[in-house]
Every structure is written in C-alpha cells, then in structure tokens.
Length: 500
Ligand code: ME8
Image (cartoon, rainbow, N blue to C red; front, side, top):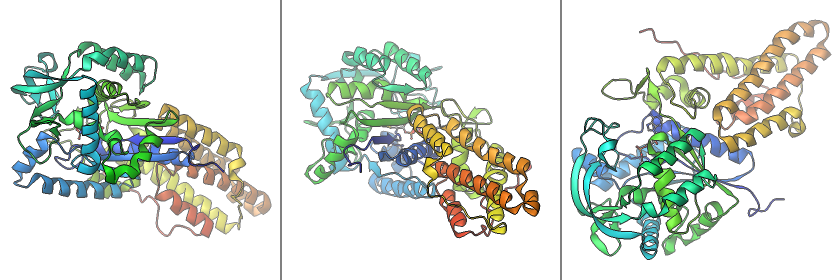
C-alpha cells in the first residue's frame, strides 16, 4: 500500500474573486475548470488539495459596502455566504475557502512574507505619483490607458500622489524570466508565456506595495507603520500559501504540514488557474515575491481566455451578461459544467450564449449520454444480460482512458479530454446501429447478450472517467446499472430553444 508521503500531490487554486457583486459566469467557469482538474487528480490517485476563496481587502469592496450602506465586514460575511452557496450548487469540491480578512490564517501569512521581504532589503520607502484604477486595483502608466481611460473598465483612473512602500520587483525580473524560459514555472498555453515575457520587459519598474491606511476594517496595516496598508495584490497573492499555513499563528500550526506537503515539496504539482486578465500578477509579481522570500515557485499556471457573449465582452450596459443561476435553472448544473468542459476552448476566448448552451445540452447530453444510458439499461433488463464489472481496470479501454486522464493532468487540455470520452460514447452508439442486438436477440439471444454485455462494459468504463465533469449524474447512472432499474425520468430532459 502507498503511504501518504509517497502519494503524488496535486494542489490547485482559483484566483480569489472580488466579492463586490454576484459572481458571474466567468468566475463560475474558472472555478468549474479547477473542479474538473481536482476531481481528475483524485481519480488518478493523487493526494489533492483544492483552494478557492475571496479577495476581501480591497478598496472597491469598501466603496461597495458604503454604497449599500453596510458595515464592510457584515457585507463581506453575506457575500461569502452567497458564494459558498453557489459553489455548493455547482458541486465545487474545494477543500478550503480562504478569506483574506481572516486574521489568524491569512494576515499572519502576509505579514510573515512582508517581514521576509523587508529583511532581504527588498522593501523601501518612496513616493508614488501616477494613476490608479480601483476597478483593477492596479497602478497604471500612460501607455496602459486608452484615451485616458482604463481599457478594462472604461473609467478614468484616479491620479494619486502619495508616500508608498515599494517592492524591488526589478531586482527579480531576470530570475523570473529565467524560470519561465526554463519551465520551472510552466505557463499554459505557450503563447501566454511569450506574453508574460513581454510584460516583464515592458513593465520594468519597482511596484508600489502599500497605500495610505485610512483605517478601513479590510486592510492589513504595514508592520511597523500603521499609516500604510499593504497593497491589495501584495496581500491577495499570498493566499496561495497562507491558506496552507505559511506564517500561520500558533492556532494554525497544525496546517503547516499542508504547506510542506503541497507547496514546499518538489514532488507536488502546484497549479494556479487564472484568466488572461491577471497574467502579470501571477507570472511576474508573484514569482518575484516568492524568489525574494526564498519560497518555492508555483509549477504551473493555466491561463484561460475570457468568455464573450454574442462576440462581445459581457457587460451590463450591452445587456449580454449571462447569469450562472439562470443557466442552472434552465439546463441544470451538469449541463453548464459540460458546456464549460466541452465547448469553451480553455486556452482561447470562448463564446457563450443561451442558444449555444441549450443546443449543446440537447445534442450531447439529452440526445447523447441520456439516450444511450436508457437504451443500454433497457436492453440489459429486457434481454436479462448480466455483467461483471470487477476486472474493468484490466481492460484496454480502461488503460487507454487512464492514460488520457494522466496526460490531461500534464497538458490541461480539458476540451480534448471531454471530446475523447464523447467519441467513445458515439462509438458505442454506432456499434448498436451496426450490430443491431435488438434484431439479433430474436434469432440468437446468447450472441445478442454478449454484444450488450460488451457495450455495457465499455459504457461503464467511459462514465467512470466522465465523473469529474458530471459528478452527480455518473453515480446515478452507476446505481441504475447496478440496481438494474430504468431511470424514472430522463436524466437530461430536453430543453426547448426560445424563439426570439
Ligand atoms: O482579479 N470569462 O478578481 P476578479 C472567463 N481578486 N473568466 C472570467 C471572466 C470572463 N469573462 N471574467 C472574470 C481578481 N473571469 C483578483 C484575483 S488572485 C490572487 C486575485 C475570471 O473577481 C477569471 O478567472 O476580478 C479572471 O482572472 C478572474 O475571474 C478575475 O476575478
């Protein structure tokens, strides 16, 4: 038996999202992708830890709480509750939901890292004069703006002049570049690695790492200087290790082993999943902070595209925002999860419209997996076919699918993974058509049973590998097969397309 210490480790994280509104379909996409990989890693026998959470120490959250007239901490508690409910609905199998207002766990980690940077001589006092976009929570130069506006938010950034502490980012630029070039940090896809290298070349200046502390409840004061608060990104990025116990307070010591198991361990695969909008922070600033503090680097960064609707960026003004809850009400959680895995190109900008989601759901799930399940279980019962699934792991098909699973945990191409499985399902459909066990049964029942038994074995094997994508439906199908019972109602009821 494998002991815990030699079991391969897999650590996966989502960005921690700003809870200044309801999470939209883009946030649920990133989180679902992480969930697919976390479940796949568990299926592959890896010891897995899946982290998600909320980026709460941000100015725009204070602004939002003021706008709705609520105390910021009360506001954040309510938001966290709502997000956790949404993640439960989506079957997100996370191990920890980190909140950056958590003093024992997160603040201590951030302060430990800050002190580490100070000891290395990498934090110095300076004066910042320039732009700041609260929407991005990011300092901007003239060349980042389009017609004087932030291209992402369409707003005029604030012009600020203030005392700040700076982090010596430039000191680590060459080392970060090297770690990208020699794949110490692997960036997926390759084109984003080139983009990251360009960012490093173009943004070669030290970064302001604190802002004046106006005494908000959601800010971490700079150690030794309460007049300054740690810059939200300098705080937020640390969540990936503070959640594992890095720099933890006494009460948090028990979780230090998580840090040694999943981060400070050459044999652990650490994976950050992010959207392309926050590449600079993850591929430049975060590695520089870690290098400065002598902390191991993340091993993989998956950079996905941003979803558009009707060929345009989703925006409330255009009126093309898709709500995950509306979609779940229409096609169910599994319908949405399947669309993410199958139809949104992971390394590109994807298109999401209600029509596309519904037509894919009807095609692949309702007519595809749903119908096939019914046909096979029906034949199993009517022809009295018995199947022994005990030695399924020795079949060629199982080995092939297992290989595909392990390959995907290296190249992270979830679209090809899903495609591969649905091709195998289609092959079963095609075999039913050509071998016609329903006709054969009338003349040679034994032969027909053998065919159905083989089809069922293949089907059962395939759905074991579909479980990471459809974690509710697969156990239901398995139960129906084992109990030899037809589903009472369709697994994926057909959804009518709305005619506009
Ligand atoms: O940036 N399509 O939080 P955030 C796909 N708090 N994914 C999308 C998307 C879209 N249209 N829009 C957003 C932050 N996302 C920081 C992160 S991490 C230490 C701190 C997803 O709430 C995508 O993953 O603005 C993107 O990177 C993230 O949401 C930004 O979330």
